[in-house]
Length: 416
Image 1 (cartoon, helix red, strand yellow):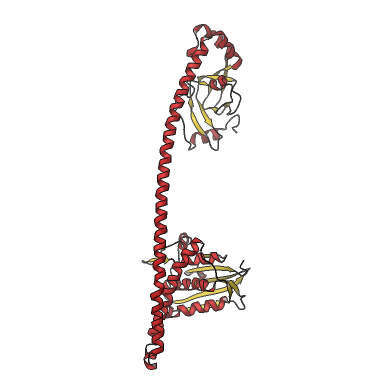
Image 2 (cartoon, rainbow, N blue to C red):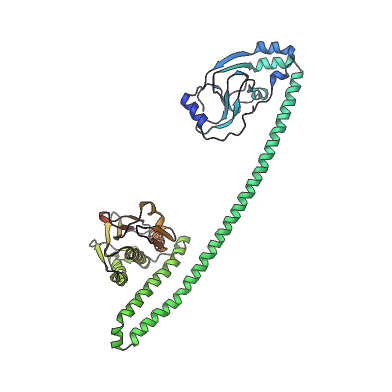
């Protein structure tokens, strides 16, 4: 609701507001009453009108107020708006010679807009009773008013038709965009299904590879097996890493679609972390990196999907190995409230704060301090989805002592 008078600041705010002007500066009220009145009736009209003056910011009348007075602008300028000062819609501006409010008076309806003085304003106002008496004295005036109102209705209908056509065109454009969006979604779905099928088919040759390795381990003569034990371990490590990647690709799609089921079981988180460290030992040793485990004693067991959470830890350790030049990677686990909190701290170049949310999206690459791009593929996306599925949270922060990055995730002790 507008006040009766706007302060200078409110008036400046109104004029500076980024609003849509839905009409031009041409008068909305083009019912030129004075031109319709014969000379013989002008004297009676002049006697019936009362002069009023207003200062800038004065509200001449409010939207919704009774329309019992019409105004003729003698000098000055006004603005016509709908709504309040928070969300005004400008309908136009009025100046000398324009008439305000006569349509509401003729239709005996409330005001459809508010009028505010923009400068010193001089008005002549005509009450409805005086106007009714004038119509009685000048019968031809009623016919002139009806003709003008008819012309206005025709103009309004033309605008309405143009607006309707514009609406139809907009609906067609929106429909085309929706169709295009649906096609893109269908293509994306088809691509994902194709990827899932390909990834699923990778499991068979992977199983053959590991079976061959195990067969060699069993059938090779002891002295040959001993001389080639490191090669066998490299093959097994490569198989384990490839299997984790395949499982991660498939699981990411299932977790995103809500189709994955968690196989919950009582799990010793300390033992799970040790198993993950063992799986990554070979790749860390080759880079002169070692793992430092700081596990709180007597951690409670947790109901969780051990295979998936082990993969979460492996993915985080694998990323840490990639981006740690040398030295130690610290993995910690401790009880915090009703959760077990696990952290993996590398000593790499770190991740900019602006990128820390984005890295959990699919196929994200982050510009590191080094020349190469820091790519996380689907690994962190899977970590995010798997931890969320367990009711936990995962995030990345600056590493301990301001060195590197620290990935942290929590797992509630009581799974529901």
